[in-house]
Image: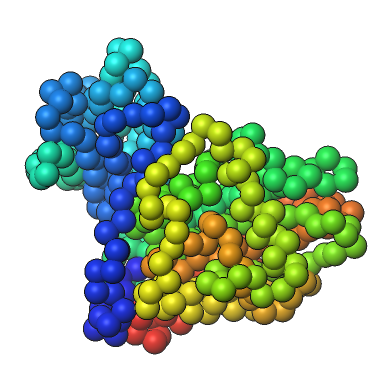
Length: 381
C-alpha cells in the first residue's frame, strides 16, 4: 500500500522512520546483517570489510548464495527467510546452515536467472536480488483495490514453540488453533480478494514479540493482524474482541488483563533473545504514530463489523491496550481475540474447522473492506 504522501506529508518528516532489523541473536554477535525486501527485490546487507562475507550465484538450478561470517546465525534471519519464501513466487526454496563453523550460508533457489545489484556505504555491502523474468508480486484478480505497489498483509499467528499461549480445559493449545485460522485467512485473502498475505510463522516456532513487529517493517507490510484465542481467569467469559494500540494504557479491565498476559511472553520465554536497540525498547508516539493508531482503529472497525456477523463479540467496538506486538510506528496493526479458549463452549468451537473457516472469512472480508475504504478516501495510491 502506497500512502498518498500529499495527504500525509505533514505526518512523515523522517521522525525516526528509517527502521532497521533488530540485532537479535542466539548469542552475542558483532556482525550486523539484515535481510529485508521491497515489492520486487530481496535485500541483504552485511559488512563490506570482511572478505568471508560474499554473495554469488550458481546455476542448475539457479541459486543465490550468501556467505556471512557468523558462528551462530540470528533467528531473525530464519524468520525473514520464512517471509520472503511466501512473498516472492520466484523463490523456490530457502535454506540456512553452517558452511563452516565460522560461516553461515544462506541459499535461495530461484525460478530464473538472478540479478545482483551491489552498493557499498558506511562499511556495509548491500545486495539487491531480483529475477528478471519472474512475474512480480501483484494483487491477484477479484476485489482488491488497484495500487501502484502490491498490497501486503502480515498475518501473525500468536505464540508458538516454547510459548503455548492459553490452554483450554480440554487441553487445546492456543498456538495451534490460531495457526490454523491464520493459514486459512492467508488463503482466503489471496484466492477470494486478490490480496497478498504472508505469515510470521508457518509452523510451531517461537518468535519474540518485537521481532514480529520488525518483520512487518523489514518486508514492507501494509497491514499487520495478530490472531489469538486467549484465556481469562473467569471461564464464563466469552466472545471475540478486536484491539488497537493505546498510548495511554488499556481502556478496560479485560484489556489490561489480556495485554499484560500477552506482553509477559518475552519475559517468560525469551531467555535466548536479547536486544539493546532503543527502537525496540520504546515507541515514540509522534504525529505519525497517532495517525497509525487512528487508522488501526478504523481497520478494527471493519474487522469487528464482519466478525459480529458470525460470532458474538465480547466488545462490539475495537478496544485499545498496550500490546507490544501492535507497537508499529507506521503500519496499521490490530490484535484479534477470536474467542476465549478457557470457555468450554468456545474451546470446542475453536477446534472445529467450520468455525475456523467462519472467523478467517470474516477477517478476510474486513481486511478487504478496509483497503477498499482507504482507496475510496484517496489514502492509497
